[in-house]
Every structure is written in structure tokens, then in C-alpha cells.
Image (cartoon, rainbow, N blue to C red; front, side):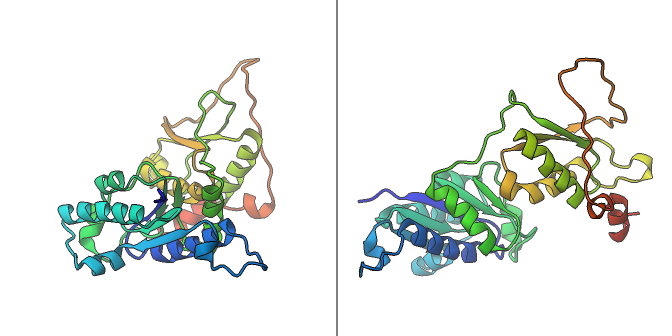
Length: 280
């Protein structure tokens, strides 16, 4: 009896979990079992096996549509037990898993959070959903074809995401990010290419000078939704006072660098973005 590696695909209803899970199964089967033109064996008999379990299919099978806390917890245990009983190498399970207890029960080897919508179609699930603090991948756009390969390669190679090293050399970005936009992303990518990890300091300036409408939590969400699919674990965000001047002496152990970009990037304006959103 095989003990599978459990892969949890979680997120709100309508976020694209099922489509992503189906494509991930296809990717893993194709790349874990390279096609051999001399073999007549089907994939299931050729080597590594991948099973996919969908939560709605399982609820239908057991005629269990109880979405109380007790019903959700029971479903998470059931999904784990069925995954383990599948006698497979990899078990992909897609279900909402809105509660921390459900995720703890499932004990995933890999967790993929499909975070593409702010609210699902069921209000009770929206209220119950607790955004996970621990996950391996956070996918923020409904584009399975783009991200399945990225996730699949990591799983096949058992390659974990980086963990931020606070003693390693790092780059620092300081700004208001009202809001975070493509110019900031370009600067971040330039910085991380040099240092491997970046600290993003957000000035505490909501409402300052009659502008800057976004609170720190919203700015953080803008940044994470943009960076997490690729750069998760390679950056940290911190709130700092409304710094307007940086003063340093000689031989401080770091340097301040101004990067130059194309006119297209330089012309991006957070002020113009706020105006287009009707915020100024």
C-alpha cells in the first residue's frame, strides 16, 4: 500500500481550484512518466500514479451536504482518508478548506492556495473562510496554463520555496505604494536580481497630505497578490513611520542606488492611478 504525497488545492468556490487540479494531474502524469514509444502500458501501469479527488464528487458519493463546522471538519478527515486509501503516489485533493482545522486535519505535503477572487458565491463560506498563513504556493490569477508548470516542477523536484534569511545580504525598497503598480514591480525585480531577497518598507502615511487613501493592510495585499506566485519567501513587508529623509554618515556598510528604466516605466504614476479609481 502506497503512502501518497498529499497535494491540497484550496480556495473559495469559483476561484478555479477544480480546473487547476485537473491540469496539475495531467502535468504530473506526463512529466513523472515520460512517454516511451516502445511501451504499450497505460500511464496507470507505467510507473508513478496520480489520483485526483474533488470535494463535490465526494460529497455526492456520501450524500453529505452538511456545511456546518462539524460537517466541514468531517469532510476534511474523509478527504484525507480517501487520499491515503487510493494506493497512489500523489493524491491531489481540491476543496475549499475554509477552516484552519480542516487544513490541519488533511496534513498536506503541498498546499496550493488559489486566491483569485475576493468573495465566493456562498456567503456562509465567505464568512467561514480564514486566509491561510502557511502554504507552499499562492496563485492570484485564473491562469492554470501559466502556473501549473511552475507548481508542478517544484512538486516533482521536491523543491521548497525559499525562506527569508534575516542575516543574508538584502535590498531595501522604501515607499508609500499608493497603490503598488508595475513601476514598483520593475524596481523590485531589479533589486531581487541583485540581492536574492528584498525588504519592502511601507511608510505609515494613510491620509497624509490629504491623499494616500490605502491603509497598510491594503497596501500589503496589493503587493502580495502581485509577488506571491513567483517571489513568495524572498521578500518581507514591514510598516515604518512616514519617513521623508534618510540620513547617513560615511562607511555605513550599504549604498543607495538609483535605478533607471524606460520612459514607459518611469511614466507610471500612482497619482494617475488613484485619479482613475476616483480616489482623488
